[in-house]
Length: 308
Ligand code: TUI
Image (cartoon, rainbow, N blue to C red; front, side, top):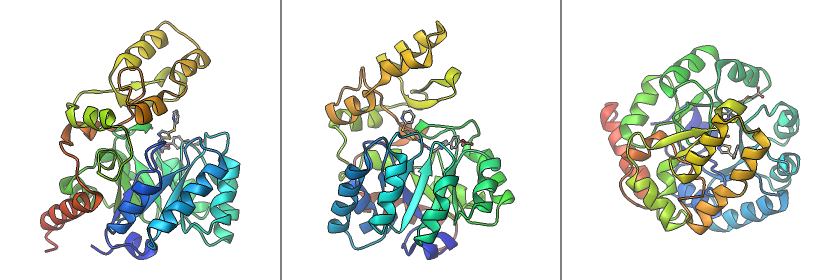
């Protein structure tokens, strides 16, 4: 399944791993790249020097291309934006904002820039600003989300831009990949399924929470403050939504969630921590290596699309 994305990135399969905060570190990124997809290191809110170390460790594990996701709401975004240039990173994706101010620096450094967008308007703006492709991320995704679903967003973005589109949100098997291709996407971005991969360093409790999740187990916090975040329902989401309904300020609510993703990912506190995951968590039933996941998904997608 060669597409403009596989050619542009020099990868075997049209699968990109999500740049998930705390989860997308060097082991996962290298495993996905080694398996023929594009692994990503998630910059999240980490300082530039931490991201630099992650990049160097990934380079020791794989000679294949990998990328870095720059989370634009991070207080360290300016530093991380420079680190990716200094470290010779080949591909950058961005999330949770508009990366326009870094575009010139990245393009001059020869970096392939792929902003994650949740609307047609931002996709068009990114194309005009020199983006090489966009990830159209539907609201089914875990973490920070937009409003439109993958089913509605992807074809509208495909119609609006000429650069290739990568579909994200709600995709975790070959059927999802085939469907995304039917909508005009030339690759997919997958997050939640890779969280439960053998190479993923997240706490066992986090993996088990995803494996046990049912179709309607996700909740969105922070809608009223314009910072919607999708995660699996637990004590934290109930408390957050109760306080949100009471009209507590964004700052007070942020205090509640401060460090809570780390608490779930690293300490395994899936009761009081934030268990970010997409709506497709209900379909994910087992831990496998990244290679097994990718090969299984691609076999299924190629069969469905009549390519084998
Ligand atoms: O960025 C993501 N997903 C994320 S980032 C993240 S870290 C975080 N943790 C707690 C609170 C907030 C963030 C966890 N998950 N996905 C990409 C994405 N970008 N989804 C939606 C958007 C987006 C939304 C609005 C991009 C741009 C935008 O507006 C841009 C503008 O300023 O016009």
